[in-house]
Structures are given as C-alpha cells and as structure tokens.
Image (cartoon, rainbow, N blue to C red):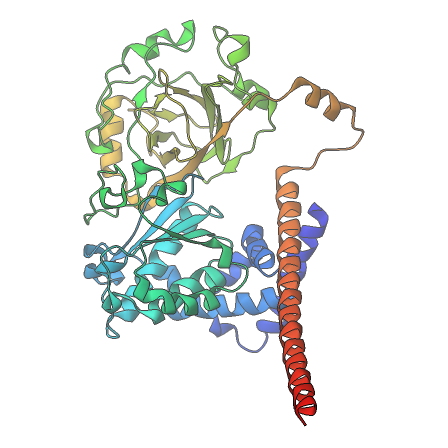
Amino acid sequence: MADEKEKLIQETRKRFTQEYMQDSSSKYDSRDVDRLQKDDAWVESYLLWRHNVIEEALKMIDDSFRWRKEIGINDLNESVIPRWCFDVGAIYLHGYDKEGNKLFWFRVKLHVRDNKTNEDKKRCVAFWLERYAKREPGKLLSVVFDMAECGLSNVDMDFVRFVINCFKIYYPRYLSKIVIFEMPWIMNAAFKIIKGWLGPEAINMLKFVNRSEVQDYISAEYLLPHMGGSDPFKYSYPPLPDDDFQTPVCENGPASCEDELESKEGSELDVRDTVDSYTSEESTPRLRKIHSIEDHFKLDDSEKPDAKPKNHKRTPTVFKGPLLHISPADELHFGSKESGERKCVIVLNNVTKNTVAFKVRTTAPDKFRVKPSNSSCEPGSTVDIVVSLHAASIASLQDRFLVMAAEMEQASGAGAQELAQFWKEVPRNKVMEHRLRCHVVETNKPATLGIKENTVNRPLLSNEDLHFKINQLLDTNRRLEEQIGHCVWYQHLITFLLSILVAIAIIYMLKDTSR
C-alpha cells in the first residue's frame, strides 16, 4: 500500500512537470512548485480529494497554484491586509469542536456586502487558512457560520462561494464540517444554491443547528453565551486570537530522587504568566545521550504497573525540526478515567551546535503539569519533558501543547532570569514552533487481542498505510453512494414517465368507451 501511494505521488509530480511546467513556469510561485516536489503530504491531499485520479488532481493543483500566485498567498501577513479586516472580528480561529478540530468562525452579522472591500475580505480568509495550514499541516478545520441576528444585507453569495472553493480546491482535505447556526428561514433559497456549489463530497458536511442542537458538535466551553455556551472569549485585536496556548504549571515534586533539586525552584509558577513575565527559577534538566528510543518513554519506578503509559509500547514518531527533534511527532496519548494513563513524555533532541532554549505551553494549564516547562538543551543532548494530568483532570481531544525553541548564541547564562530576558529579545522569525494534540485512549486493549496479533505471520500496516487504505475505502463508498443516487433518480424518472403513459392510455380508453 505504501508503494502504491508513493508511485501515485511520484507520477503526479512527473506529469505536473511535463504537462504544466513546459509552456510557462511564471504562472506559478516558485515556492509552491518547490514545495510540491518535496512535500508528499501536500501531493497526497490533492490525490485523495480527487479519488486518486491523477488527471483531476493535476487540474486541481493547476487551479490552486494559479490562485495562490494571484492572491500572493506566500507573502500574506498582517501588514499587507487592511487593519479593519482584523478589527471587525468577523473572521477568526478560536477553540475546538468535540472531535478536537480547530474552529474557524464567521460572524455573519458583522459582514456587510460591499464589492469595494470584497477582495480584502477574501485575502483575510486566505491569510487565516494559510496560517493554519502552516501551523497544523493536514489537521482538519470545522467552519462555523454564526448567523444569529443577521439579515439579507449580511449574506454575500460571492464571498460564500469563495470560502467553499477554498476548501474544495485550494485547501483540500482540511474541511471537517460546516456548522450553520440559526440560519434565518428567508435564506433557505440561498443555501440551496450553496449546496450545489459544495458538491456530493461535501454535502454531508453541512450541519444546520439551533441553540439546542449546536452542542452535538461543539461543547459549551467553546460556545459564546448567545449560543448557549460558557466561553468568556471576547474578540479583540491585536493580537490575533488563534493562539490559545498559556504557560503551564511546572510539576511540583520530583519525578525521581535524582531530580529532587530541580523541583525546589519550579513550584511557584503562575498559570496565567506570559512569556515576558515568566521569571520563576528553574534549573537546567539532567541531560543525556540517546541509547534507545524505548528508554525515553519509561516512567519513574514509583508508578503503579496498571497506570504505566502505553507510549513506550508504541513505535515513536519523530518531528525533525531545524533546532530540535521532537518525539512523539503529533500526539500525546493519555488514558480515560478508567484506563488510568496519566503521564506522557516529550523527548527533545538538540541537533544544533549551540544551546537551544525551549518552553512548553498548553491550551489547558489547569489540567496539566509540565516538568520542565522552560529551560535549555545543550548541543547534541536530549531532554525528557514529563507531562502529567493534575488531580482528577481528564485529557480531551481539544487539548493542545506548543513547543517553542530558539537557538542561543552563548552556551552560558541559561538561568531563569537569562531565559526570561532571552525570550523577550529573540525575534519571532527565529523561534521554531511545533504543536502536539492529545489522544485519549478510552479503554485498555484486551489481552486476547494482543495474543491474536502476535500469532499473525505478516507485518502490521503502519498508521500511514491504514490511513491511506481507509481513505480509499471512503472514496469508493462515496462513489457507490453517488451511483446509487443516480439509480434512484432514474428510477423516479422512469416511474414518472410510466405514470404519464398509463394516464394517457387511460384517457384514450375512456374516449373510446364514450364513443
């Protein structure tokens, strides 16, 4: 399966170069072309969205690349978009749905139809999507159209069509669902047109909800009060509101006797402290070389056997950043209340020749304790960061962690005060960021299942292969549903035509009998 996927990706690249790059390469941004040749996941997203049909994927890439150059997507930033686009608060990223997908909000009542500003609003949408795609590559988004208190003057069909095309063509495989909150009945006709734009692949992603139904998809903690939620969030700019990360509390108490000195200085950190005011004392953690990958996922000996995390049993994945290699690459696995898995380890490996300062932030600082949360890593060394659930807290899919790292010019001066000053002065473009999400293991795996797996004399599929195979099955299922839909339509048509024929025949029979 992996070979088949790789073959499709390579064939797509080859044909794109031969069929689309020969006449004129100036129609694309060279940065997009270079990325296409290096980023397998990007090519795969186009293939999967077009059911692995290379011809259709190539047309989609062509359309997408032309648009990206036209709108200048690679150079979009806050400074080139009019400030009023951010001030009004009609479009922003904030919070997560129940499946852990980021929420992309459209406050429709704040949108006024105006052809003069339409292009600026489109660029603002593109800015948010590109910003998210770079921070969370391949992670799904849920779009929320909050239509409370809106009227016809707020609905811009051209703008809505642009948003839909963003997910259909320009950012394939990013859309999880579209939640439409309290759509006025007067707009039913407009949304019938919108359904036609979505196409059969995305039509099932539309969720029309009211105040009593919206919590089927989004929990109250991320819903505004007028939607029946308890989220105290109030939009303001600056800064951009998509960064939900806060400084966590350092783990109180040592993870083992050897770390006793470390814990003394890290017990008084404030949950709400920002990076600029982070001044509590925390010593540099014990550093060591990697001997085996499994060693990084062991807990201290004081943990109970039934509460051991399962991370050491999984094949670790590694994110290879320019400053740090981070393992795991994507997810921290915590257990439910029943399974009892309450600790995870993040392993940082410094791959530079200088000391690297790092810090860890989270969207749920009340739930998690992190040790160490703000320190440094010597060249060629590794640091184990222990992330543990506090008290009776339970991890959820909405929880996220942000690992930030920056290279220090001098190896000395890595105390708390020096680090705080360093983070104040380091330029934003020098900071490496990597995000991790939480995965909740609901129940322990049955022992009998493990025995059966060990007796199978064939290698197990990797996560990527399983993901590819599942997507192929889903695509096949979609095509079958489309064919069934066509068959049902033809059946209704034939029934209708037969009814007409029968009616005509009856009319002629009645005429004959009346004579």
